[in-house]
Amino acid sequence: MGAMPTEVHPESKTRPSGETMKAMAWFGSQDVRLIDAPIPDITEPDDVILKVTGTTICGSDLHLYHGEIVTLQKGDILGHEFMGVVEKIGPNVHNVKIGQRVVASFQIACGECEYCKQKLSSFCDRTNPSTLQNAMYGHRDAGFFGYSHFTGGFAGGQAEYVRVPKGNVNLLPIPDNVPDEKALYLSDVLSTAYHCVMDTGVQPGDIVGVWGLGPIGQCVARFAKLKGASRVIGIDRVPERLKMAQEGGIEPLDFSQHKDVVKRFQEIAPGGLDVALDCGTFHQPKTILHKVEKALMLETDVSEIVNEMIMSVKKGGRCGLIAAYAGYTNHFNIGALMEKGVRLIGNGQAPVHKWWKEILYDLIIPGKFDPTFMITHRVAIEDFPKLYQAFDKRVGGVEKVFVQTKFSNPPSPGCPTLSKVDDWAH
Image 1 (cartoon, rainbow, N blue to C red):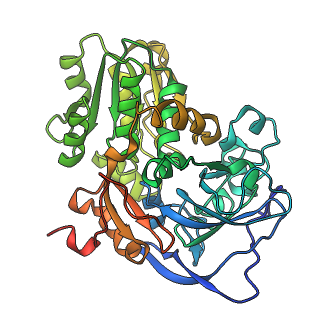
Image 2 (image 1 turned 135 degrees about the vertical axis):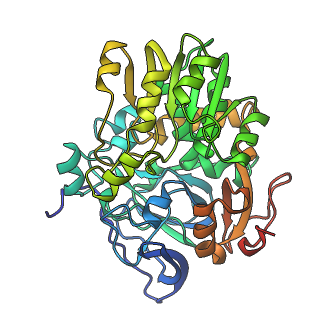
């Protein structure tokens, strides 16, 4: 289908010396490998080259791992959540300096289009060349790091070095008193969770239901409480996740014990929820009907969670979708949506630039929110292929992982120390 015109381009120059780095690359469904890849060099005048000091794996990476995103190409470098130290800067870069600690947004924004001027960085019009996304959605999101050619084909941050296009706008300097473990997740998880709460409009006194208690859901639940929600109820079936939520003051609802989630909400929250938030990656159907339809490719996504939310909120309630949906779904309860006057809000890919300074300076630095609660493990980059397998199967109660490189600082006090994935199950 060709390519849409863009301000930046995914192709990178490499170092004349031929030096290589360790990087995670995709080669097929459930086939990810640690490879030696060429180290990127300054390619365009706004580029920054980072030495990666912290990276991680995200629940949405599992869609790539399972080959659910059709525009992956063999050898694509993965990873969209990372931070590092500035090693090189292009001639147009003036907002960051060599040697500075920075975190990158998972999206690549131009900084100049109508969306970027509103800090809606994920909606940037000028960095994603995907004609396929344009045809499916009518428009395109910004380019994303390490998330297939559907989002631009840019090399990701599960590597020792990364080229960051438009470095003036896509990097946030980190103060020396903020450790890497508190800064890394501004790249995606924290900004995504905060955006879900703010965009859907959680108000003081609200009763809030959170579907999915992975890292996003855990942070969403806690941000909802910070915004004054009177009750936050978290839905999942993984015991470690339910326990972590309960320790954070969230009421757990185990959907393996309560098959009819709507009925359970009618029992414990008579009158309905004010707000329902979909924070999962619920592409795995629960019912036979959806399993068959997905297997036959009659739908790409499943409407079960959205329907539960619409049924569980009160009349005039608000439903926010921050979970990763990609295409089309069947059996959507459009009648209940209309008749109950429910506000169904697609939160979109979170505009990191809109929120990351507020989260850092108003919440993390003053001590109102500590993201390290969700870090369960720390591993070396060499363990990345095994980490994908373990993360997919939730081995050892894994929730969020800090992945270190040869450039990383030692673990901060109170954070997990280095471990090997092979040892988690023992």
